[in-house]
Length: 317
Image (cartoon, rainbow, N blue to C red):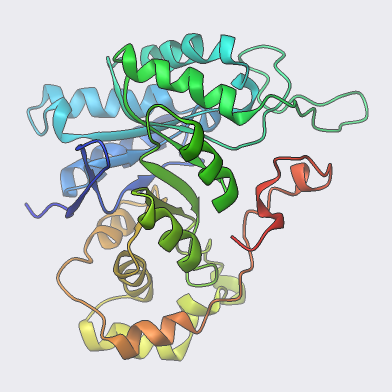
C-alpha cells in the first residue's frame, strides 16, 4: 500500500504531508471515516477537543491496531487544546482527559486551537455566552498557555506541540519566548487563501503549515468555490485522469502545505488520498495561484466583533 510522503519536523519526528480532517464527523460516522482512512493509507488523523469526537477517533485507531493493520507508532494523531482551557492551570488536566478520550497514552501533535482564550465555565461549556448571548473571551496570554503545553512534552503526554490560527507576529512571539519550538501552525488554506507568505515565514523558522478547509467547503448547488468548478481546473484534472479536488490537494502539497481534507464519505476519503502519482507543471500551479483572493471561509467573526487583542486576522499574514 502506498502511504503519503512525510516531512521531518524540527524535533526529528515525521509528519505525513496529507491528513484526514474530522470536524463535524460525529458518532459512528467519525469512527467509520477514520477506519476507512487507515485502510486506504492515511496515517495522519486530525481532530480536536472542540469536535467532540475524540472517543470515536481513538476507538477507530485502537481497533486498527488490534486488527494488526497499523502499530501505534505508524499513526500521527493531532488534537487541539480548546480555547476555554487557556489558563495554564487547566492545560495538563484537559490533555490527560483527551488521552483518556482516545484510550491512547500519547498524542503526536498537540496544537493550541486559537491564540484567543474563552472564559472557563466547565469542561463541557465550549462556547461560553453571557445572558445577551455574547461569547465570553478571556485575556490569558497565549505565551503562558504555550509554556504550560511545553510541560506536556516533558511529561511524555505529547510528542510535539504547535499552534493553530496564529498569524506571523504571534508565531514569532512564541518562537522568541519558547523553550520547545512549535513544529506546526494549522490555518485555513486553499487556492482562495493560499497562505504563501505565512508558509514562507513558517518554513524560514522550521515550522510546518497544515491547511484546513483545503477544498473551501464545496457547494455543488451554487458551483462554488470557483477553483473546484471552473473549466480551467477541469481541463487540468482531465489531463491526469483526476478530479478537481485531487488537483487542488496536489497544488497545496506542491506549495509545501499539509492539507487535511475532511470527509465522512468513503469514496471521497479514498479519492482525496490518491494524489501522489502525478505532479502539476509550473503553468498549472500558476492557474491555481490565480484563484487567490485572501477571502476566508472561517473568519472567526465571533472574536473579530469584540476587537480582542489576539484576534489573528487583522494583519496581512
